Image 1 (spheres, one colour):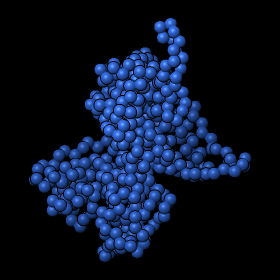
Image 2 (tube, helix red, strand yellow):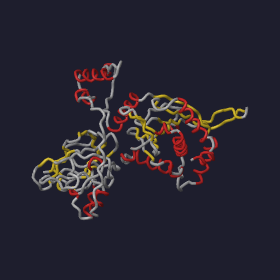
Image 3 (cartoon, one colour):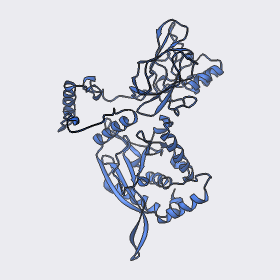
Image 4 (cartoon, helix red, strand yellow):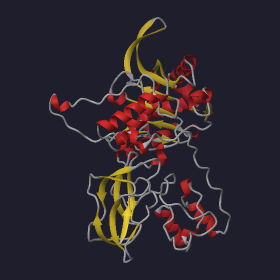
Length: 458
């Protein structure tokens, strides 16, 4: 019997919620075939079966939460009883889709064989590799266990397989991430707060860490009236952690301004109608704003940076990956458009539509939500005149877009009706000052006020 444990899904993910089983007890499963859909605090993932055989038992039902390392299914593969090492991580795939998409950044649960040599004798364990990489190795008639791994966290990549097949040297392994500070002891982590004693220890640790912070347990609201309790899970829990981290570590300051987008909106609507059914046919205002922001970041590099508080360094990024907040119904996610400085407005518009649709379907892989340098959140379609957004840490700024409204304004001494877009830039005051923000948002408003200027300068 083969006991399959929930694999390490990378990026500190400790558990997942079972969304769907692709197999049934007593049924057959093929190696690398979809086994189970699990939702983590990143997205939905489809985990393939590491072995073929008969499904002896399922150790969880839909809706159950299982921890990494727990047995989730037992497969009768014809071999003797043994505990299975955790399988390599997989990337999100649309629930019910045919296969999982490789996730290069996931971390393995089992250490790979030493670089340049085979696995130790008797330790014939699956190396960390995505199903597509394993298929490639089979097609090239290569024993994947012998391939030196150079991917993140010791993962075998398709490039490793091709390099091994060609007899070339292994590329240098990536440098492991540096941990600047150890995590707090387990007995004072939030996950351990189950009773009054644990809460007291947690509160004492928090108070010792943050001056003037005093935590008190919530009252029992059931004494006041009916309540409904729902576990904080998956994407919503990740959002909560990110927001607390950002608001605790980053001194937020906001600068607000209005952009007159009357001419830009007229141009956009004309182009949208003209391109209906063609490339960039949905042409949203957000695409124009992303392009204008990218131009602004080149002139104001402080807002395209990150601050390392441990090394006391500011890292100025010379690449432009703009994220946009997407409401998925299960929580907020931030798809990232890579290289916006080299993309056209039409291309960016298509990227927005594609990534937003896949995010709502739970099919956007984690690698398409990483690497952002600046984030934009647009509440305009939902209503509201303006917002003060929380910075998407470790970025240093976020732009909030309100609803475009017709307003009376004074132009050349006359009161006229114009279409006004409210803009709010929240930024890290450790990295930039109010004057920097005023210049950045002022230039952004100037470009958005004239589509010809926007196209010329971007």
